[in-house]
Image (cartoon, rainbow over all chains, first blue to last red; front, top):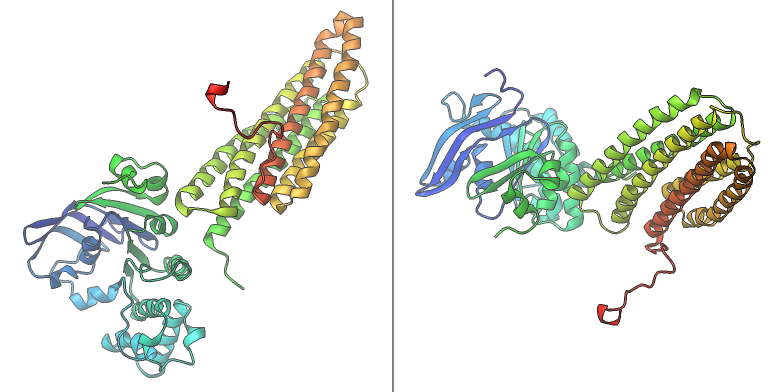
Length: 255
Length: 230
């Protein structure tokens, strides 16, 4: 356990099969805390599959088989001692399409704290405000806390989904193409938000937008056909990648 | 107030490093001239120390610029700024090298009594230093008029270099024992003139950066004729 604590998440020889399809092949990645790590790669390379392993979301898919180890703060998340609810609270996910519940703004953010029994009453109101402030939504929405969340703009909905996660005080935020449904200006603002959140949370973003990975992340992994081809500082990946396949991909010569 | 974007902060850092580098270059010109005019070897060590610093900055700035190009996909004025920064970086490094040369030639001169009172060379040094400063100020302020003024100032430095050459030649012709000292003075004036040229290059980069207008080599035809017509 010691020596691994400098990493928030580590995988060792992680393999995953969807039925007969070998989707992750011996992936070993070490994610450092409180920074943004990006996973890039072409469609079908396994990047979203890897991301979903980090909070055990793949188990919902029938026929999935997983081998290898996946450690959160040095503890195996597939071991019996780790409750799934507790894991999902610590490791939250933001999806491609904003998916607010068909509830009010307030109830969306209050949902997690209520479920986990974190707080209620005045404390709950404070928690909701703090979570909305964390994503810079409070000033715009403080007088609209009871409007239905689905009526917000796409960017606001995505911010709201991030607030909803932040409200349960997670440690890791997983983001799967969080900006692909947003226009460039909204994308830039979400990227700024991510940089801000990275001061407190470990963020892992999956994207096929290489430019976004280059802009926001400190470390980047490149995946191809289920393998982690290269992993290291983002600057290195985009300035002087060590694997030819990485270079071909980031220069747009893949395939 | 809009929060400053991370990218803008990094551009600012790049700017600050170049300003620092230019300040070192100015001090190096001064120190080199002190060796020559005051006949004091003391500042030579400072010139050499600063040159190391300038070389270090050159690498740092190139590295930072390359990182920004690789990770931020800059376009339009941001792109022109970063490209200008890398070119200015190279010019300042060359200016640092020339200051080393000036210092070395000055050290040679100190081995013998002065050949003549120095008037034009200190004047050239003042002009050259001002050109370095103004070209960098123009870069920082994005001021094409100031850049244009730097380009105009170069004629004066060139003229002074010719004047030094003519004057020193008369000494050398009259008495061959003055040739070594005479050559050192001619070389120093040549180095100062080159510092002016590098400042002009910086000024031209500033004009391109601010206005997107390429003012280099005004007499070069825009397009070479096809091979068949050559």
